Length: 286
Image (tube, rainbow, N blue to C red; front, side, top):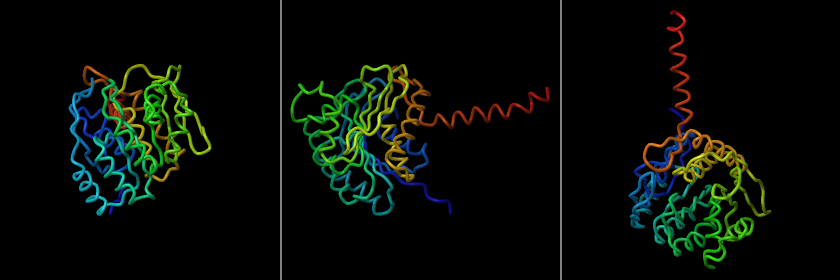
């Protein structure tokens, strides 16, 4: 029998454009050699421009989807994205508590790329209090890191340093925090990894032109995939960031909005190589 690839369970809402959400998670996990197990938390109405609506699924459906699969399949990592409601967050936290030895990666999505609000204050509080204490790694962007770190103190903290924000997030119980720097005003993109000892490492990446739909989903899913293959957190972060940067470099624009990361850029490169090699014999004969 063929060896079973690592299985990663992702909880998120659907995205019909496949730019972000559950579809983006599945594409990324499959691209990195994992078998995705998908739990639908909600259904969205959106395109490459923005999100028009979100309908959260009932929490009992979330529970039944996940536990039915978990009784059947061994999972190597969990990845959480858009969760839809406080009730969903609570039931997912209960499920995660039953699997404390499985890495838990959280992409705490607060808004869409256009800025559409996808969570409310109650959901932010529930994530911080119920999920972050169980997380191996959370991956907020710099804006969301500040919002989550000071979710109970109002908007006046939005200019707080990322270092202070990271420390507050770590104090909630998560083992590591990776704050992505796409939204910061810097020549390159700097992603910063924090742990119990403070800043662990800064990763610098060339800033690419354009706006991308689903880059955060791609990065966190890629980290989950790499950890499912047995890499450490720091090893997985390096590999996953390289992979994500390549998906953005090779991104395409199928609609009128943002670019979509090409999660199978490597397959298209291989196809082009095969086509070139295939044409060589005829060209030599001529």
